Length: 405
Image 1 (cartoon, helix red, strand yellow):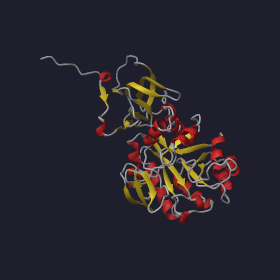
Image 2 (cartoon, rainbow, N blue to C red):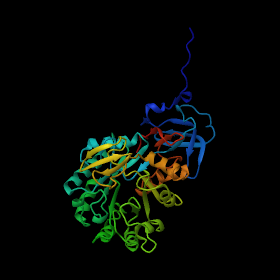
Image 3 (cartoon, one colour):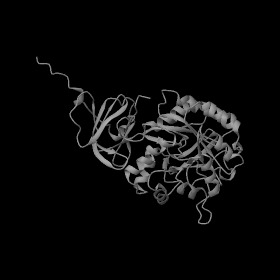
Image 4 (tube, one colour):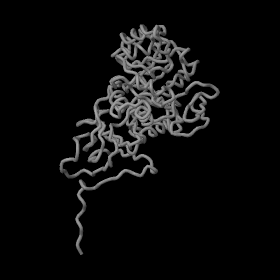
């Protein structure tokens, strides 16, 4: 009897699951050769191949790869191969809120987003009473240090230093004037993890707080009634980001330009766009994306992301979800989104008409740069092998997460 020799690893080809099986999650992205892919590069989409090893991208190029052995081959079958997505503003998903103070809820939410292509994210803690906010911060930061929650990297504090008139769905009784002790307590809990702090710069003491602590966290202007000049003063003091532009702030006026004009015209500021199709309509996203260098797509997702319509009670609020739109029960106030970041990418391409490579930059390289992540957000040699495969309709098919620091 003749024994057939084993097939070399280089010719072992993995195929993606059928759509009905749900997106694939592979946490061992080292040592793979991706072929027949539409590579989403910084300035274009190009058919080609990509190789990974030891959790890093080692080579990529157009057409077919050069002959090589040793790496299993993944046939991308003409789908998009893009960097893993980065979400700076996420309150929950998969039926769990991130800010309950329960690490199990943080894990559930983060992994729900990971399976849909978000390989790096911040856990957003809403403005809640101080003891609850500290407990929520500890749960998020503990989870960010847990290898079992590999895509959670840090924390975003959406408050408590917000303008009461622009609080949106935030808890009104939890709002505070800028206070060094409160900020220092939260920064101590984060202990070196990436931190974004949303703040209304017109509040007494806000500019001084930004100037004193801008080296310790990224200050984001939001939930604010600030004037154009007050936003510019905050940027002078060290603020570098804007939380969900257009939402929870004065509208753009031709004689009162306000935060919107300041964000769009100040090159020091990056700014978030909630891409769920409810918070911003398509023409606004098209306009605000600009040249693609400073806009950042975010979900502002809440616990019902991934669930159907219905009434849900999470943490400190009850929310009604109708036709995918989440509102505080009994009000018309939006209460976050039910979108994953791949949904936002799809909306920006199909409804706002932006090029795929531009939109992916808004959801990868741009947010990574806001919080100082290196080696993420772009396909290039030496970058982390955090990858997502998207079909023609930009639905996630597979997520590959590097097992490396």
